[in-house]
Image (cartoon, rainbow, N blue to C red; front, side):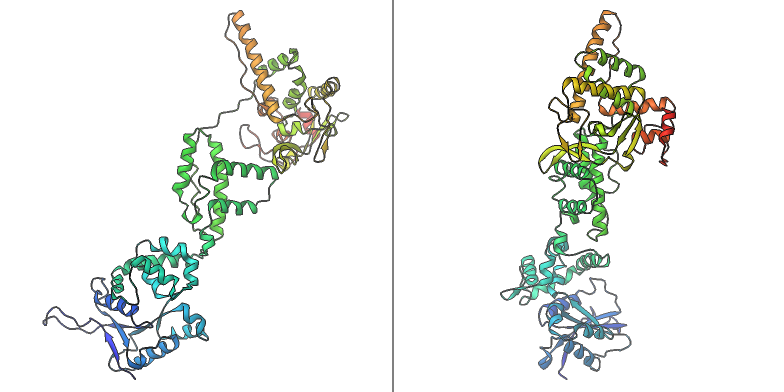
Length: 547
């Protein structure tokens, strides 16, 4: 057996009077490399007191000599460790002491036959300190924030650790950080002074592994935009809804939060974003719609093991202006407005449509999507089974035949006498004014409400004539009030939604069964009216009685 040098500072004392004691346990390091690891562990041994290593623990470096000097393969190193246990010169106590065998994993994992079995067997009697891919990675950990700055961004290249000339990737990475050739300059050992930093940095790597986080570089580079694209691919939603989501994302999030890496995304990012939107005057409901896109996408990132915690959850708060309450017209206002339209030469053609929207509580998309085949004049019923929505598709912005907004939207609504008469009047108007439908959208044709060009009225067109009607009404009311020496009773701004809201209010005022109201509205009522959420189904006969 070739002699071995044992490096330790255990017996170094400041004075001869200082008592010499024997260690309780000794740790013997046996290294594959002859220089880098040796310089490092010698320095570690020299500063053991400064590092507050337990005073009864001795650390020793066993340096190979003569024929043993070139031993580097794991099997030979483990055999060397076993042989040294019998070496009387080092006084190895098999009950207490430990051999720590240090070698790189990148080279030997492929070269050594039955490598995994060898490691498993070697760990039964010794501590195997396998640096993967190489000891240089361990040294790199001794620099503050090296995990975030050097290791995490280059994880894939570090794992591959391919050679460029005579230098491996991790070797070059360490050289760039230190400016020291670790194989030729003993100053590399000074890094042992930062071992506490290395321990903390290593915890970050181990935590990723323990938490089963994906450490693949391509995933680490995934941006918020890429995450949202993945999330949307999992959603089985209506095409119109998908278009709306993407429109919101592209307009507000894509170029703000979208380019941040998912692994770098912090709660402060989204809070700052929401605060900025709030400063712009956006409504709380608008900000909430963006929260509803970000939060589930990041939930998916947690479920996929990309991040530990969702940074978006709980950030909505009260950002944004409170939504303006959409108030329904009073019965008096409704009657005055309809009377004004009926007596107006300009706006009278819009009267039947308004009466139907008030009386049937239809959404604007359902109203403009109505065809004559949906209206059963004999049985006085409106069959709502779809809607017309206007959005950008493959052919640009145009109408699309779509399903109802919710499954509850498919319904049969009985006509009141006013609604029945309004449909009859609309049919007459279409004949008189030549407003006949001449288009087919999807599987729908024969639309009831058309422009002079024979196409369905745009939603914006409906809101536009409602605005003009209110302006004309208020202008006349102002003049009348001035002539009558009184305060004018102006009509509030209205939209197609206000007409539907007003119709629902009239039902409530007439004590219509809440279940019937739900059925007529084609939705689950969650606020605004004291309605039951039980949608067990209201029959047409019950509706007729209530109406």
